[in-house]
Image 1 (cartoon, rainbow, N blue to C red):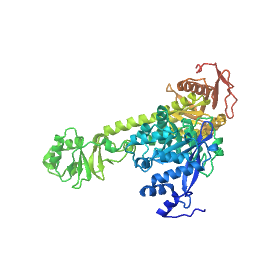
Image 2: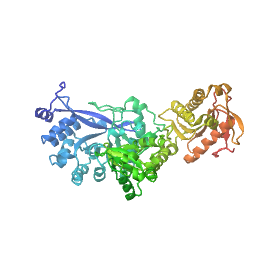
Image 3: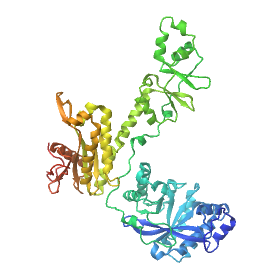
Image 4: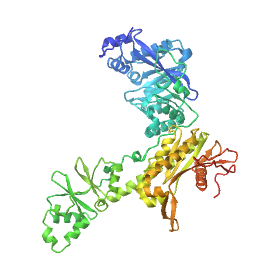
Length: 615
């Protein structure tokens, strides 16, 4: 029968769904990632006569007091339609609400499943919960009857709705399904990655298998598998259909599992915690704009640690700020008290104080430190709420907090290039080593960058650093090649790409050509920079170029990230000595060659077991 769209849900549609044949079954494959085998299917019910969202049908059944009846009918329909010989286990939804409200008994569920004539160990009940479970112990007791019969239990949509750690801990499910919200775009979301990594640790400690829902992109699948999650479900692996799937969709089946994917890393702009001006707020008195200077003087005496006094109008809106030092100096002048004492205090205030709303982030407030107006160091600044005076913040507190956050953030991402910093670099090397994954550790450095920076200044120097970063990122394969910024003009690229030589050569050639735009025409024409050497004597230096030293990291060669970094740095130093663009340093048994566009092939060997080369 053709499905007819019906906009409104009526009791007649619910009654039709509850009759034999009133529901139709669809099945979506669940895949074991280690071998890409379909091992189970999620059973999905649909109304046989109307294009009706399942949740609407379930909500109507609950309001009508027939939720348990609909769920057992759906379970029976799915069980009888499923091909157990080819489809593996069958996962069927069951709401905690229906059980706890008493309209559904475990025996009813068992009878629904037994109607298919299959061993009950072939079934997994997914506990779905769109309401808060107030009596977890009672739910666990009811599920115990199902477990005693051989049925396994899964917790559905974890990370969304009301599926929570209490349910996980108390129910002890065999499986926990991670909601698609956490899975979709995980390859681009450091936040989602962090949450799912934590869930993997919890699952390991509790002995629970995880199933990732909503897998729709190859990049996300690679991350999920790299995290050690065993099972996945999503359109990439197979769409819901009336028959079971025996194989995985082609694209997912062919996806490489031999390389470790690069995890997303927070950039500097996102690394600041949610610290706002409200967290710097100090409650301090204010003075009305109609008050006299004598009243302001009294206020300063009553509050000896107040560096500045905010001035507000009768509605509480800030009008200015009176600096204690400036005020005292003016009032100490001859005849100032007689002339100014009874005058309005606004005559001695600064009418344009630095202000910040309570919701303004510390990241945004850090721009204050870069401005020409440095009065915040002495005066502090006014903090407002909805435009009205709320309190003050001190320049000392702002400088200290911004400095702390920037230092901490820079360990994870370089503030200039936003590339991963030292900690993510070390973590990625450790992941590669732990997995026994061969890779090439490339250390990238600029030749004669100090003379360039001394001659052209830090602003143009920063432009050159960003050019290096953009060039490396453009030539790296983002799925497998990790690009990090150690600091200054030092970068690291951890290659898993087989064509790393071509990529390195492209990086050097592109940077050396593009960097010409950062030199003055006169220097470019001479082909040298003029400046002082380290002894302070006049010298000329070649134009700044890029050098890359590469150290192969075969499985078992290195034990720690520090050893890899040491060998890569040695390769870079050797490349500089040889004055080549790209140099490969290898142990004696390796076939190592240097790849330098327009230069002879160079080979350098280090004795087996030696992690660095003598100067």
